[in-house]
Structures are given as C-alpha cells and as structure tokens.
Amino acid sequence: MSSIELTPSQKTILTALTNLHRQSEDAVKGEDIAEEVNRNPGTIRNQMQSLKALQLVEGVPGPKGGYKPTANAYEALDVDEMEEPAAVPLTHNDEKVENANVESIDLSSVHHPELCRAEIHLQGSVRDFHEGDEVIVGPTPLSKLRITGTLDAKDDTNNILILQIDDMLAPAEEPAH
Image (cartoon, rainbow, N blue to C red; front, side, top):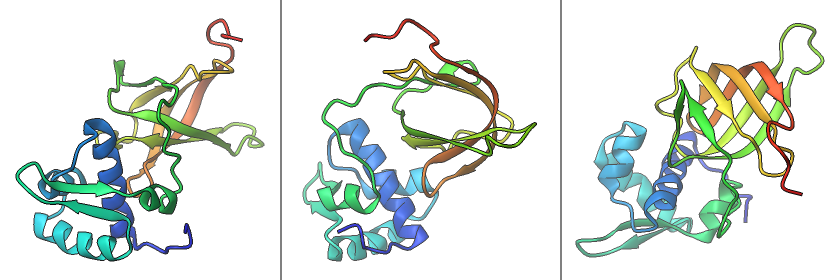
C-alpha cells in the first residue's frame, strides 16, 4: 500500500491530521488542520476529497465530526501506529515539548571531522521550531542516548528537525535492562 505517491501538500495535510488525531484520538476538524498547516479551510476540504478517494482519510459527519486517518494513512506516511509507544522526551529551548514523540534519530555526516548532524523524525508538529533553537532529544528508552543540538533546518512536510550536534551522551541515565 505504501506505493501511493502523495504530493507535498497532501503529505503535509495528512501528517498534520495524524498528529492532531494522535493528540485528541477524536475526529479532527478541517479548521484545525488548516491552522496547523497555515492554509485555507477550503483548501483542506478540497485536499480531503482526494485523500478520501485514496482511502487515506475517512470523514466523520455531525457536530463532533471531522476527519480521521485510516490505517492506510499511517502506511502511506511510513509511520508506525503503536498502541503504547515509549516516550522519548524532547526539550525545546529549556521547555519540555508536550504532544510530540521522537520516532527516529538518524545521524548524518558522522565522518566529517568538525560537523555532525542528526535528523530527528517527530510524531508531532515542528511548526514552533526555528533555526538556532536549542533542542535536546532523549534519553531514548533502551540505550538512554541523549542528544543536545542546535536547530540547523527543519522539514515541515516530513516532520524532521535537523540538528547540528553539540553533545551526545549514552547512557544519560541507568539503563532499564
């Protein structure tokens, strides 16, 4: 099913829907999605029609209605939908980020003598992060890895923060195993 090719706009909207649905576990209103992705509610309604046709979204009628992602949506976004994912803390400029969880950490340019970057894949919005912000990821559940870095760039479509690593520590606390 993950062979569905989404446009960047569809991917951004679907990612926002899955993030908002994860927070509320209820149908998400088009206006809330529009606010999250900084688009017009009419644009969201139009995009939802195509996402419904692709069976990635279901419409929920009524006053408490809105949209819900289908299992295919998580598959198309290549996101694991877990019942109880382990919480990986995220701190942004000394404040704990609620409603976000770190999905994966990719280290890039580790061979570079003076620069090491980490790609932080989030389940949650990256809208409030800006270049130069301090970000602390972790400790992770198993290895207790903690990464401290400065935000270099972000990818709103894929919910990725790109950090220039300032410090890495493992284990940051006693492992649970």
